[in-house]
Amino acid sequence: MEFRHLVQHARTHSQRRSPETGRRLAAGQSPTALFITCADSRIVPAAITGAEPGSLFELRTAGNVIPAFTHHSASSEMATIEFAVVQLGVSEIVVCGHSHCGAVRALHGGRPALDHLPTMLRWLATHAPFRTTAPTEPGMRAEGQEHVLAQLRALEGYPFVRDRVAAGDLRTHGWFYDIESGEVSAFAADRFQPL
Ligand SMILES: [Zn+2]
Image (cartoon, rainbow, N blue to C red):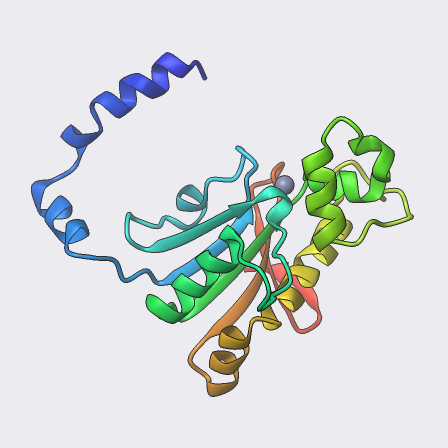
């Protein structure tokens, strides 16, 4: 898709929206869920879920990696999760990984594969363990799903997440999006199964 097509669509965006929608959105947001996923261009949360503007608070990171919570530093990721949970009071958090993920491939490819991406190397090395095994198949589905579970564990380390989950006010979900088939699965009863 050429950039000029994106620009053309943006130019006419306001014409495809009702004034009523604009007034509703301007009044504030009360999203249903915080949706954390990879920055990958092939993942379009609104297309996958059918979410309308105002429904999903999104956090997109390299490899849908969630940094471990710490009191000693701040990051955009931690601030975004805090705002969604504490300020907006979302009741659901979805961590959505995906097949054919470049970050998952990098985690299984070893550090030399990231020599030309020193920032990515530091990001992954700080927040996600490198693996010594090669991916089992090109889509790296098993590895990607394991990666989602690791991010869920990191999320549970956020005190305001842990407290609300314990109180029954918040639920976390591990999802996996298959780029090739378009199917979405969710972690339940110890395995990923179709939603
Ligand atoms: Zn990815």
